[in-house]
Length: 168
Image (cartoon, rainbow, N blue to C red; front, side, top):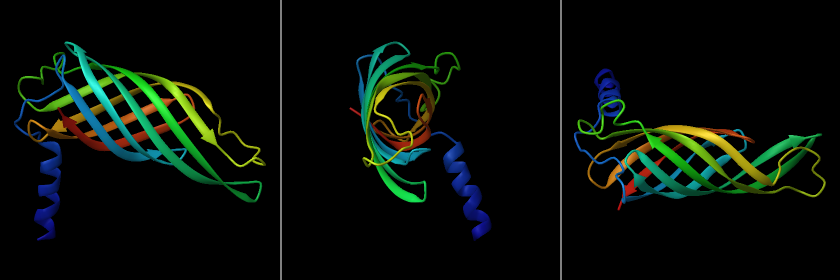
């Protein structure tokens, strides 16, 4: 039974659904997710709006915390991040838009991180502007729901995000 379960799981992940629902101009999608960064595990919520063929603009907010052992003392850090993103969707380039439910995208992000660290902390967890790049893959299961996997490299952290996309 275990020998059959693993190939089934991989086939469900690798074979896209037959629906055709990538983000179109004027359409809105909500994204909720979690992931991993070198500065803690984020919980995020965001929205993207299709602004032109193959282009979208989005806003994303996240909260993460992590503990750090610095100078033999454990410090807890809290970080709230607000980002704007401009994405290019490569579906037309790769000719995937009309034949699958895949959404391959990449873009630039910019925003602000508000970090709270203990007063005596002497390390580097900073409040300030963030800039970076990201790329991702989204697979829709029907006209409303999809899964999203995104990799990001920002000025202060690296991370991966997994989440649910809801088309409105």
